Length: 341
Ligand SMILES: Nc1ncnc2c1ncn2[C@@H]1O[C@H](COP(=O)(O)OP(=O)(O)O)[C@@H](O)[C@H]1O
Ligand SMILES: Nc1ccn([C@@H]2O[C@H](COP(=O)(O)O)[C@@H](O)[C@H]2O)c(=O)n1
Image 1 (cartoon, rainbow, N blue to C red):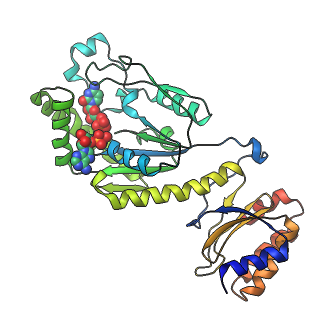
Image 2: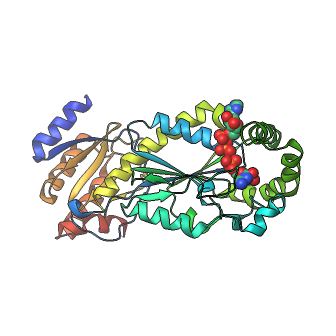
Image 3: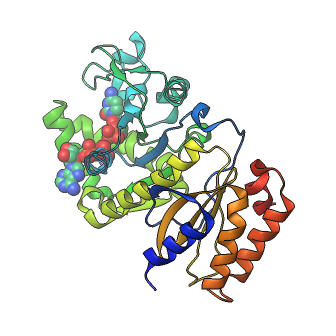
């Protein structure tokens, strides 16, 4: 029996309204906890925040650019941790070769947090344009950044502060060999920044390498994904982009319905794999295709019975869970609460 005919039968028998929302590749995983349950129209839309860390010249910016290019149908902004370097005092400027730009204290993390908080609350922010030559964050006009669907936070120590880390929906660590990073750094700092090669090597051995070992490498454990070879790793980047798209699908639902849960499937190989409940609406995955069915609770019982009939035995637990939930719950809004409790 083809999937369309099954869906048609279910739709015909239950009188459900098919919203037409597709989420291919939805995973069976809890993805978001509800906090409040305002009406769908009033729910504040939260951006999907991706953190990209890794050593200097590991290819973080390159990886971010590739991700942004591939996510061309999304509104994405890139916020670089470099923009939040503290301005140096006159004294520090006079002895700049003794300044450690690779230490967590070199960054104004409070300002970074403030900017992200504003973006998360739909407010545009001005991100400083850091100048590596003058060591100033106010040498150029700031960049106006508008709230977006996706925010990418990139920087050597972007995983260092737990408050920043906790804002991230996905964490990526770009893992490139130290000798490759050093070779790129020498070229970049001498050619692009006009620095003396002796000073570049001194800075590397005095600050960059120790800080990598002490502060950057220890944050690798927070990464959800580690990309070896940075931008050369097209397979990893393709997979990440695919994953972001999937997550954005789920995330969009969570943005719309604040009390949405995706529940863990324990019935491997079943046709109905994932059940999500949204304040009286039901979303489920049927025959490998994820569809959002909008139905009232009274229709849910009919669909449950039909599913049980069609997939005899296979969906007993799901449907009984479903029925039990339906019977126990008189208020529509309580539906998903019961499933997880
Ligand atoms: N895969 C690569 N192959 C060759 N050069 C690269 C590659 N990735 C990055 N680079 C170069 O290395 C330097 C640092 O890359 P970048 O992406 O800016 O790293 P990061 O943001 O980690 O400092 C840049 O000059 C960039 O052009
Ligand atoms: N005035 C400065 C500020 C920073 N650096 C170095 O930049 C590196 C971080 O930038 P990436 O884009 O490579 O992540 C870091 O290692 C700092 O030492 C600098 O040299 N001068």
